[in-house]
Length: 252
Image (tube, rainbow, N blue to C red; front, side, top):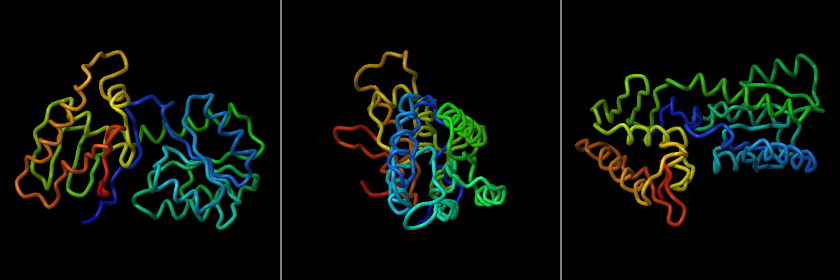
């Protein structure tokens, strides 16, 4: 089994942009704290790492929506980490903004050539940083908006509004389609029922307490409707006791 190279691990979200999680990677605690406060005040969720190794572990475990990455890091440079992320099909779509004191044109060109999405030089304005983050997220979200989402042989095409498994059509209702799209765009993350409701139905819609569970069951049933697939895709939608649900290719 393999995850195809065009699996989308980050991309457009039905939830507001301010729900995005930003990973701050910098070896200076004062900068991590300052940027973290700035992002929290702007409505983002922020997490941090002090070196390249911890950053990579956090990216795999938390799947942030964007990485703020310092160029100079202990245990490996930020540009080396950016190169590693772009080579890995699981992390290749995560947006990266380099934070660095390096101001030469050659450094900027090197970063952009490695797939970095933007470049912010130190010292920087907190307002500018937030604006750059929002701009990159909008740009990336726009590119991914109509992209076919695929995990193994499960495909969801937002444009034709079709779901297939091993090229066989999977029948499901519009709500289950939106649920599946949300999960495919937010793999490996645990979401509460309230969060799923806000993302899929909207914050102003009243739902009975177990409505989410009913639609999850319907989605699982639809994903298990194909005869003899190589994978039981219904099991990729995992119940996390006391927390909610996640879509994961890892065993629960």
